[in-house]
Image (cartoon, rainbow, N blue to C red):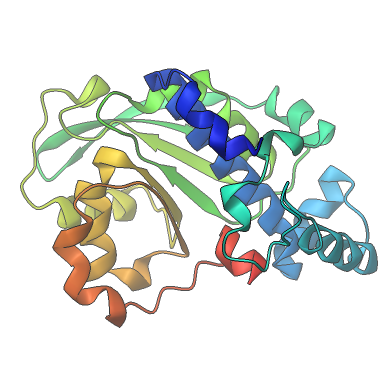
Length: 253
């Protein structure tokens, strides 16, 4: 039976849902390294990835992969039955992740005291220059990204990683903001997160949806994971010209 058909029989606890989100995000960002030659070459030095010619061949092999029904990645329905658990994270990345240090800090954004966690690549990994910002759903907080090792793995790949407790959640419980798009823009500016890849699950759509409709040029990539409030920006979606260079869709199509 196809993996996707088994999901209805699995108890979808908050932790399991978060785990699925993490798995998809990590695989997307790892596989996308093949997509951008300049970034893959940077990471290749420290992670012992194959030279350029071999990287091209590896990317071609990935595109040729088939799901349990025989469809290739070029088929829009490929992801309905693809087994993400069949992919593994390279040992070099896992080793680098174990050496990552995660720091915590607070910053005042528009009067809201905001708690966040940050990690950078360990000394032996050359920075990719990319910034990944992790938001969260209503039942979660930045700590979950650390507990699931997502922060460490992404930093181990060479990225700077910022996980935020949004106003009203986690360690930012006492904070509230009305202008959510303005808040997110101010947060990224103060943290010097220039054109980051924004990962936005569930509730965080209240922040990310108005943000991308008002400031699409401020992001390099957007990874929406069933965000809420999508109807609020529907009228402007066709106007968006965002082309995330570290995304699953950009890599495969």
